[in-house]
Image (cartoon, rainbow, N blue to C red; front, side, top):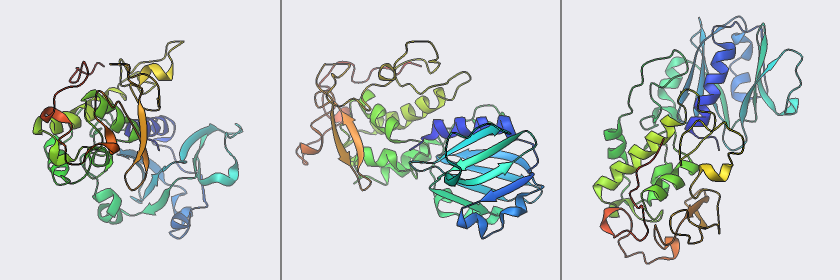
Length: 313
């Protein structure tokens, strides 16, 4: 599933291509767009493209309608020149917006709907989002970087004290934009067992998890950042840079931990059964450990070097 940094880049790409452009033709296969009347977008101008966590909102003027999309596991936005061959079959195109120079196509999103401003304000998924890790780092208009309200994110994290750390970090109502990659990487950086209950985490550790997740997301949308990394500079466009070099543990089952060499483990976690990767030596035993033990954060001693190593980048 695309995470906050990917959605930001998507919005930035779309803005560069269609911001201020007039819709010549609008077509849809999405029932919640068709029911409202997709033809209402024809003649409208793209006034703003707003990423919110893992959501994208296209705002149109003068109607003030918003096209809301959430990519889920399979969705994506593409921009093509007229006559350019699409990289996915047309049957998978849920929304097609034709502009004078380009065509913007949304393929198989999990959510696709056309909303008025009041509906956006009342929308359960949008209104319920926690502070956005990428707040005010918007593609349009460009603005001075603001900071997300980490005190509010901390309050929301504390309210989930019975949740595991891995599940709480993924909850978009805590800190919007954090996905499964960042969840795994942040917990590894701070030496936290993903199955540690939030209540068992020391308060400084809770703050550090939120701060590091924010730092990583923001560094990975900095000017020039083209690929996600949690191990160094986000500007990773040089030849020979492997995906494996850019992440600590995510997607590396049975590979040696970059700190201690112990094989990385993977197990499904939470109601969505998301894969969780961790080092049993540096972080803790995981789901097989004793539930009564205090694990994670400053309440247990470090079991591997670099437990609180500063994040680079």
